[in-house]
Image (cartoon, rainbow, N blue to C red; front, side, top):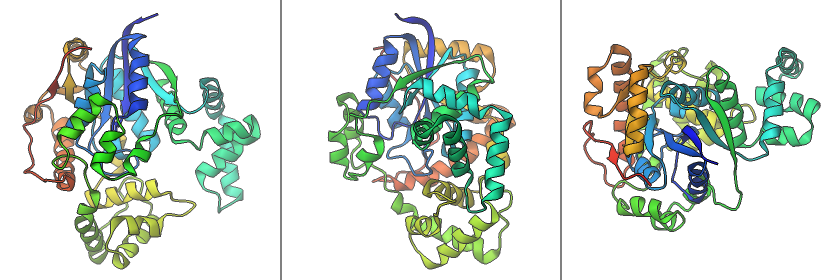
Length: 387
């Protein structure tokens, strides 16, 4: 039975595939309006998205979304906790009734893990495990304590990327009036990473839904697929400059001194970003963690900037139902809503500063397009019909 309300989905659509189509179809049968809070041009694992945010937003609207808003840089390329916190903040600020997310295990198990992790004794046990075993990373300590209390299935569950995010969504939702709604992930659908692994744009387009393929296929060789290797010279040169000049890194986001030192040393030996990341990653620092640290070093992403709540979100795509959500969100006045990027500078200082910071990074990232074009602040949201 359809519920009268708005459901939000925090997403990347990198690219939009059949699993995403399935999720939106499920939500369409239950909710009146669907809002997608979409990552900007760098995704949560720290990589450049295969297409810019406007292209991915158009694909989302064509496949059932009513409104696509931006989860801007740097929140979209932060840790699972900060990514979830910022996304949930936007969902709550625009007046969402529900937040939907996909889980790789039954929701009951995730709720059990969530309840356990809130217990003060649980956190004390994790800290004690790290203290007693210096080679144990924090995530490994959490896994061991969860296995002790809830068994092997629970310990395995928290290693899966979708479940890690799901648990962070549940934590963040506790500070809001937004209700969680889980959709079990169907393993028969190829994941975004499996599709991206094909690398060839024609092959990727052949593996996604028709309404998504028509968008990405139209921009094949122009705006899709992006190739982040084209940014290697910029990344490596910047890292080498930081190292040679001894530029301070202590205020940067999620870059402890030992990790910064390893990255800067690796940048002297390697001329490709991925080789730097592979050389540094170990059992304490995953590839994604190192990649995010590299972004922080290269782009100057500070811990203070990520700790602040998103002051704004940009409208990337909408239909008539989406405009209903926007009218309500603007009346709430809890977050600045940028309808057109060219008007972002008309807002307060927090939004102007945050927008210009993100735009500076996007201008660099746009060089990974197959046919890079001049940076454009005047792009308008995609307007579509309600499905």
